[in-house]
Length: 423
Ligand code: PLP
Image 1 (cartoon, rainbow, N blue to C red):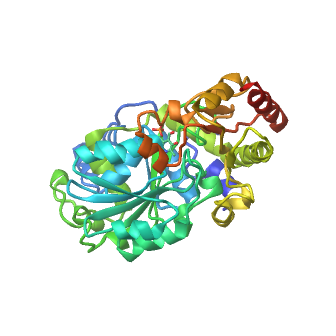
Image 2 (image 1 turned 90 degrees about the vertical axis):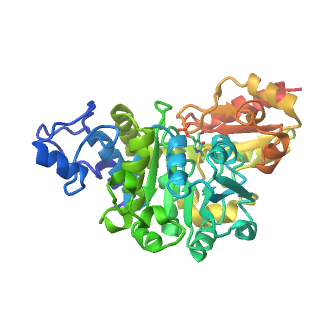
Image 3 (image 1 turned 30 degrees about the vertical axis):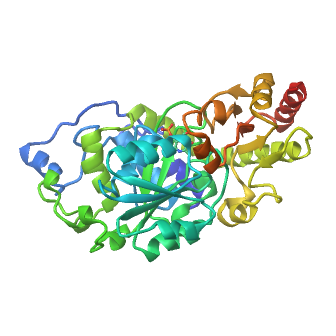
């Protein structure tokens, strides 16, 4: 089945009422038929609903549909993109281990990996996403994951995905990517050899800025990489917290299973059924929206490239852009999402431009149907040191735009008057 057909139908079998819309199962828990049924569910002899922290029928449709759109085997929905990223990394690494991460990461992922996970004893080692050789030098026997974004936010780089996937394979390490900005409508990293894909569903998935959520997707046959792999004893040895369960011995996708039974159970950052329902609505139009977002961003990028007050424009859909070759190779139909950035002279000019726009909302979000403008140096990246900001490609004069679904001519006219208003 094609993407758009799956986006409308996958994972939902109409219930007895025949409801066209997926019902919202707003419940905390589920009644067991009898004590044996309850015991079987807990022992995984039978699969079914136990408690909404672990599973929920509405969320199940969202997970199945998203897994299918990514070309994966299974998915785990979470309460936010950050919790999906944390689960994906914490599923791989423990205290004493390290993860090799692209320096060009979303600000929250940078602070999570560089600071918060460090306090859990997991070290993050950073490499330039365009330099796999640098990543290779950082890998040792304690490396448990190679982590990067398929379309980086906010630096807007597109790495050579299959080269990095092959590097992880060479060392038997898990490759984990954040595909939030590209979305499965543009890019399906599993097709390029990636093991685990994570998302903030708060962006293009909801599509209208309606809810916070996240999801982790695992590829088919990941068990083959994990079974007998000395890097991952947690999948090969009995889990004392789950009466000795050995994850690679269960005939279910192991990364999702351990994420659900161990991390979701104990940490509990679960998505709500209502938010899952919103994400299901968003997925129905994802592909159509991504075409329009990409078109508007390209029109804006072409205009900005010609403006004298703009030092440089970063949009992978521009043939002049250093990421153009990778974007053409990995993204469908020349689409590059709605995310673009451009640099003006300095911090003050950037603030003036942002303040002078009228159509763009000054918001720290992306992927809304309404266009958004952000100044990373004074917002999302304010907590980073000057060295960290430089390393992740965010100079003080950088302005990021998330092109919405307004008419492209209106978007261009507004940014033009804002640039002219700035001194
Ligand atoms: N990953 C990327 C690329 C993001 O842009 C964001 C948020 O902006 C996140 C992850 C975090 O997602 P959430 O806000 O849903 O926790």
